[in-house]
Image 1 (cartoon, one colour):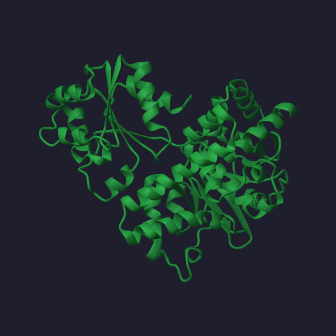
Image 2 (cartoon, rainbow, N blue to C red; image 1 turned 90 degrees about the vertical axis):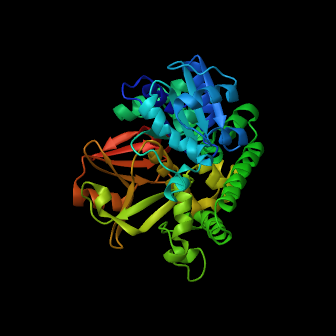
Length: 431
């Protein structure tokens, strides 16, 4: 499958000031496959070490972790001749071996000619809890996310449609009606399947949503296992409760996260560690509220008012046990959840594109789903789950702040009117 992060990996390989690379991301987003494929395509060979599954790999780092001592041992361990500039050395699940993470510092300082990438699914938690001697300033970093809708379309061989979407986005010209209908169907399939590579591959191969859902349920089970394995019993219970409650939060007219919905009398002091755990693993994402629109937005966000989204829209729908047909055909029974579901989808696309996103409120009278820093200004984004694009809150925001332009994302075709750019739901990846 085509992954856009491959371009960033190539840029890292060719960089004049390249350091060992740390690739983070939640479980099952495709890190291992992408790194092995990157090694196959751009190097003579790849030497792969998995510290979670190999005790021998972990004990290899028990003694001297200087590169000149490690390389011969790793060559024997992996069965690969490790050559400067020509071999990609992959440390997978590096959080399971403290000294392997520390060794990146010495590869940077004493052996920069070796190309080393370390990846991990729980690195955020490990580093935050200071279990590791982290090589501060000695590594480059990238984060990998689930596949966005552009990569989803590419998996179906629809590169021509991707070009049409980007052309319409750039020119604000309407999409051909037949293509618009086909892309709307792909978008609804994406809501069901999401961006986990295994789920997408399953559907490409079988066209069977039941097998997709089984794959998603297995991934969710893996997440729950991690919550138990890497947490105390008390914290594990809170973390599971918080994660399972996200669909409840997104079903409310006000999707702002409320601790009292976790349990009667629930408070931040009781659940904030659980929420931080979920955020550090990359399986949820926060969107903070701001009441001021000033640059930089990060300086004016609140600390206690935010929304929570799951990192993958397919896992969100699987976690709520939604029937695929209800999503594909917009069943009326989804009306209470549809707004939050589509918000989650757009938030995920923005996150993948690297935006720090915020939401804006003006008292109890107006709310804009997202605001982002883009093109030197602050751009408001209103999300509509249907073709009704009336947006009183967005119009109120425009009158107050006069942004360079605004964006409405809805079940409508491309267009531009009154300094507002309208784009279809399937084109959110273009922002």
